[in-house]
Length: 190
Image 1 (cartoon, one colour):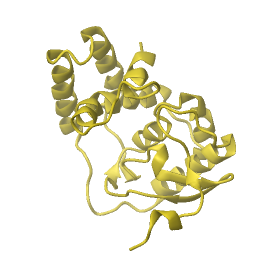
Image 2 (cartoon, one colour):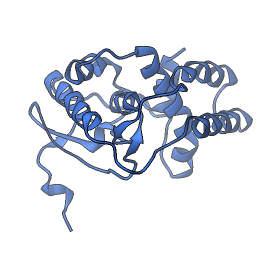
Image 3 (cartoon, rainbow, N blue to C red):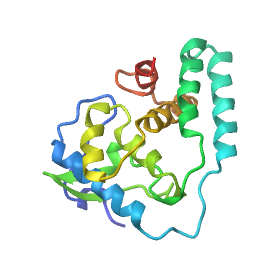
Image 4 (cartoon, rainbow, N blue to C red):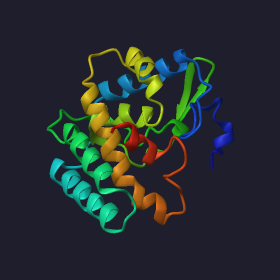
């Protein structure tokens, strides 16, 4: 079994904490995402648009019904998430490229872990997850990615992912209310 300690470098950062990685390292992460998205599609499919919309509606209802978040915060972010709920051209996506899954050494990406969500999917989802809670590095990632990106769709994915994740995080002992985490991401969309 390969130990994670064998992977050179350190994680690009952690959600809720400032990243000490350089802008060039963030750009390298964007370039790595571009390489993956340009690779041949895997044979297995990812989510469906209808499934995402249904899941999002269910999570939004749960958040409000259980008093987890104020209704206006959920409603506004549900509206922002609409930008992500549109047909896409499938790419080979990682599916969960959060910054703790991307390792860098200096300005170079040395590895990406946790491929359990990899599938045919949405390029901008990967870019949104990579920059979730670190909007200040979105320009660096996009510089490395190298193409025009609809920022409204990135914001939509930030909202959609955060709304869908909060219940899971709470039920599994994580705190989405910590500074810089999912609830703050939703608040920044207001």
